[in-house]
Length: 333
Image 1: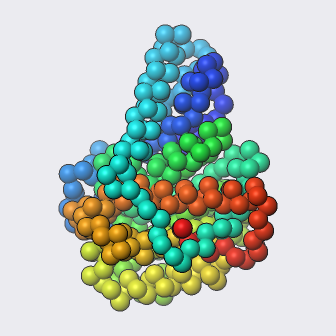
Image 2: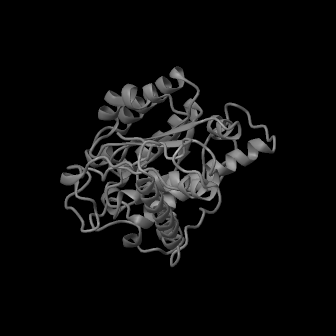
Image 3: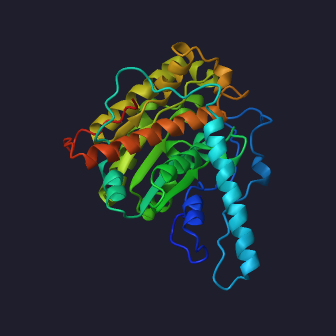
C-alpha cells in the first residue's frame, strides 16, 4: 500500500500558477501484482508485476539549489500537462456515458463531502484486489484510484486530498479481512471504496460466506470512525460471466450488505453490462485479453462515475439538500 499527498502546502514553489498546476497531479502508485486467480497470462499492456515498486513524486525543499528546484518544477508541470491530456484523450473516441435509469446518487457520501466543503484534509482508501491495484492498465497513472485522484484534484485544486491504493492482486474477503485493520481502519479514512467478490466467484467460494465477511468488515469500519463506505461488486467480463449463478448471487448479496449497513454500492457488474448490451461496446473495448481485467478505458470510466458522484454529493450538501442518515445507497447517474 502506498500513499501520496501531492496537494499539501509546499515551500518550494513561489509562483501561484505553478502551485495550481502542481495541484492537479494524480497520486502515483506501483504497478499491480498479477494474481494467479485473476490472470492466466500477462497481457502486453499490463504492468510487469515482477519489477513493480512503489513510485512517488519528489518534492524539493528550501535547502536544494535554485537550479534543481526549477528543474523539479519544470518536470512537475510537464507531468501535469501529460496527465491532463491523457484524462481527456481516453474518452475522445468512446465517451464515458452515465448509466440510464435506476439512479439515486444523492446523499450517499456525506462525510467526505462535508470534509471537502469545510476545507479539511480528505483521505480515501481504495481497498480491493488486482482491479484496484490496476492490473491491465498500461501505466500506474491509469489505474482507477489515480484516475479518481486526478479528477478530484482538478475539481478541488486547493483541497488536500489523499487517495491510497490498498489493492493486492489475488485477494478476496478472507485475505482482505486480515489487513483491514492496518491498511484501512488505522489510516482513519473519510471514504473507503471496497472492491470485493470477483476472486470469490472465480474460486467457487460460497457467496454467502463472502457477504458475511464483508458485512463484518463494514461494521468494523463504521465502529472505528465516521467514514463513508462504498462497496464495488464484481466486474462484468467473460471470466466472471462464465459462472453466472455464482456471479449473480455475489452481486445480489453485496447489494443486501450495503442496504443492511446503510452504505453505498457501486454496481460495477451492471454498469459494465450496460456498456456492452445497451451502449454496444465490444467487451474487448473495456476488458483486456485475459478476459477479466479492465483496460485503460474501463478504469477511466469507472473512476469517472465514482468521481462524478462524489462531486455531485458535495454540490447537494452545499445546496442544503437534506437526506436521511440511513439513506446512503450509492447508484451512479
